[in-house]
Image (cartoon, rainbow, N blue to C red; front, side):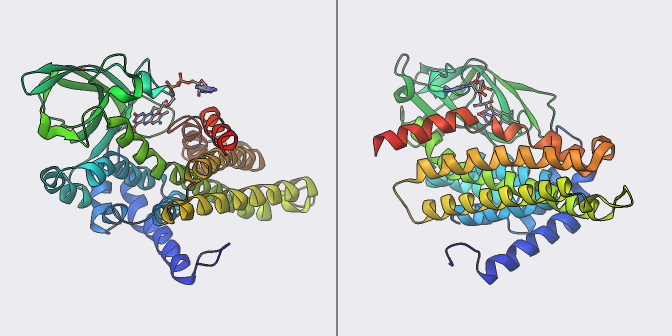
Length: 370
Ligand SMILES: Cc1cc2nc3c(=O)[nH]c(=O)nc-3n(C[C@H](O)[C@H](O)[C@H](O)COP(=O)(O)OP(=O)(O)OC[C@H]3O[C@@H](n4cnc5c(N)ncnc54)[C@H](O)[C@@H]3O)c2cc1C
């Protein structure tokens, strides 16, 4: 691969993904109910082979899919990413039985996955999680709450991180594969700013056994961190896709909008702002590609690069989308406008999968360790 650009096959694939997003997936997303899992959309992602491509493909492929789909259909982008986040622990750490039970259905878009780490009192400090796994015969009973879980409570199964050893911090957490129909498991949706399906889960003595463990007992934090390390640069890719969509809308708008005897782009304040939006978007894109390529090459500095890419890209997308709203004026804030949608979508990625401040902590730790 050329160091600073994609090869022609990758560029063509991205164009194909953008077209699929616009022509095949956007009409499905428009029929979906905001805040709920859109099963026809997930099924279409399966049929197109995109979910299958999540498993075993590298971080760069994941980033290209997320960036390209985000440009034309953020709902499809998010549905795809969530299948990956929820099911990657099964693909990477599951037993042959767990993989055979769930991965074909996930890949075909028939089973919906979710990743349940956060709790009301454990977000950034995930090692403080308190959902208890109380020993019960050969297995455990899960008791507690998970909150802000994407795809909850409508997913078909959850990768749930629970405390098997009290007081042991990150070393006392186990990952369990919990099917949604287990007794004692209930949930409710949360109404958020973005259309993202998300909710909380209540565990009232949910039985799990040794066959439900993902990886090893008390080693669940490794399952969580391995998954997040892969997905972190791809959150940046999602952000870059949104920034690119906002930039393109702004180029079109400012080239045509009559103002002061010319068009908006004739005003240097406007064209320079657009130049800044494009420059920052390209810088973020390159950092995302570099982080993904480092992951795929098994480089040692992946944590630092992934954190830098996620941090810069999500903050850049916020800047670019906000600038795009400004340059569009009132119409951007009208319900249903592309930018009104992106303005709601762009905010959360600066908080989830490690808030911006947490990424800075990771980067600083890596810098001082080397
Ligand atoms: C749309 C959306 C989808 C989500 N999906 C999922 C999901 O599928 N699964 C899941 O498990 N979780 C999910 N989450 C939860 C997400 O992971 C948490 O919101 C995130 O980890 C932050 O935790 P918190 O919200 O409790 O904020 P807190 O941890 O309370 O942090 C609040 C703020 O404090 C500051 N802060 C925190 N720690 C530090 C630090 N070390 N240094 C400096 N400043 C700091 C930051 O500004 C941070 O934003 C989702 C969240 C959102 C918004």
